[in-house]
Length: 311
Image (cartoon, rainbow, N blue to C red; front, side, top):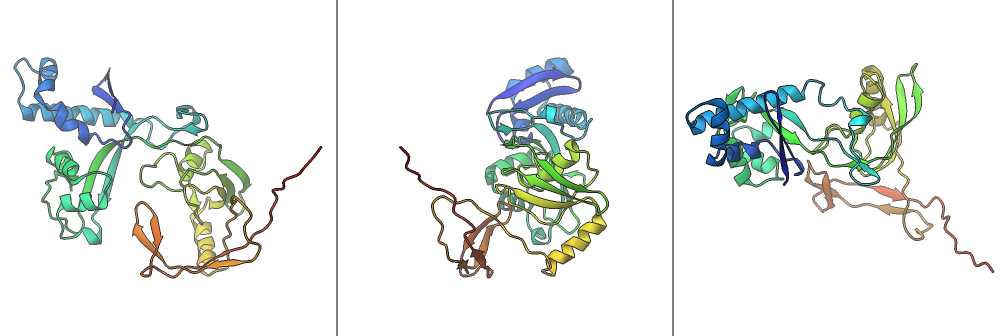
């Protein structure tokens, strides 16, 4: 991980190349003796205690967060995007506050157990290290690893988000019907529809609102992150509810067109295999006897590739 520190009002700006790195990672290292003299020379004459160093660093983090939110997190314009490699774009890292309320499956369990099993991108040792630093809060109070989660608990944390790059292919608004309050867009692959996982600003909804000026976007159908295609999006909550009911009642049918390598069989193929969700947050599903019934019908539409001999 490469960490750069630049001076700015209210504290130190910390940025890094590590994807999804949390500012919790920096707390105890910066509170080590190696940094005590630096902070000590700035704040006090005598060498500060460990508690003083931690308090000062938390104050610095708070100033950084307040400064970062001056213009809002999701208000990203095209000028903010950085092109890392041809065909891809990403946004600069930013501070983001996470706030969540206790879910039913979390009740009666220790906080450390919950975060280490629900958010498995890091080890339990990391989460213990982060919680013991004293910056994660429960209902506004510093949280302890052995805190028993209760109904109504509000958990807060702040992370330094590094969103993965997405395709630089522009989103196209193909149809805008102001009377019936909907738009039709062409979504490129690699861009998720909603905020999920490591994506918050690089989503279809966020980009439409920040770059196209829509006040609010309501989704009716959803395409997977890697899937490109047309989507109908409502600009009114009332219209969205009506169209959602049509989907639920089966009045609207969804079809996917896929391009495959080789010559697909000409006859209709039906796949009836139960699908089991292995990881809800990662969207990982597998074929398994204990899964839910599923049925997918494949039909070749056309075959266009030809090999031609010419002299």
